[in-house]
Image 1: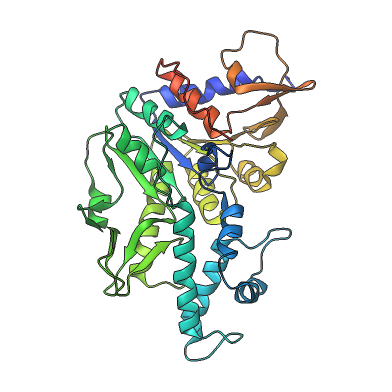
Image 2 (image 1 turned 30 degrees about the vertical axis):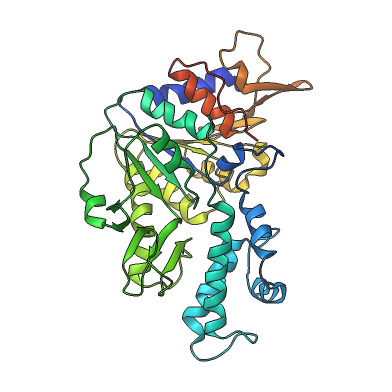
Length: 385
């Protein structure tokens, strides 16, 4: 038995999954994807969750943030993120009543929740550069290959980069909202949509900077008329929300569950490090229940950096991981082979001493891989991390 995996062979399996007309195809784009876009100083357009946490916390009252962090219990070695802090605040808002928590009353906590959402928006609500980026490469692939089934995009990111790239390429998409200036969330349309396959389905799993809920419980996408109690819908804490606050999130997650449970489905994750246990459960449970579906987890770093991903892959044989130094296929982890044969994917490989490394977990490199499948060889997506 071969003790190493051939990079070209594994990537060919991925390519076949993406090009077959029989397969339904979806992408899960995580927080690592925006890192592929850099400014002139070499800094990412939007930071990852660690960078976002640092940037937001620096703009808030340090003593209050420290107080909230001390009550957050996480797995060993993991520092609280801004999402953990937001979850903690919302839990306290629901439970505190007329009492206080370390000098913070309900009004203080509600103000902090709003401030955090505003700071998150300030950091992530960035314009996609008016040039060809990794996101443009992805949408070029979507528009360049006609298919029977619509492409679906899932993302826990709050930014509007994927929307911008779809609009730039004139690709129509449906995201669960209907309308123009203040589009309203319509569950019925999500459950019974019969749009043409050229329409991309976009499901924002953790909300968006342009999602709002008003004081009547109506959820809409757009621009609030005034500061009259509208709350931004960023990040579902999976805590004790009212049904109206939870519904958009639950409906989006149901779409992921349904996608993996139906027919021959191919889900490709990029920029996602498998630290969201709720999404992991959906992925592993549905993959286990439907052997005709498959997920390719494209990882930026060495495979040992992703223990949660490895744990998921051990639970189901149709979750395959491709990392920088190794791959995990059908229950077996192997390093990459140093092959001397012709490799059509040489742009996805590099040498580190005597070992071969695979770069497909880099969203910039992966987007160029997709672009080449359309027959285009333009030099796009050069600003990747």
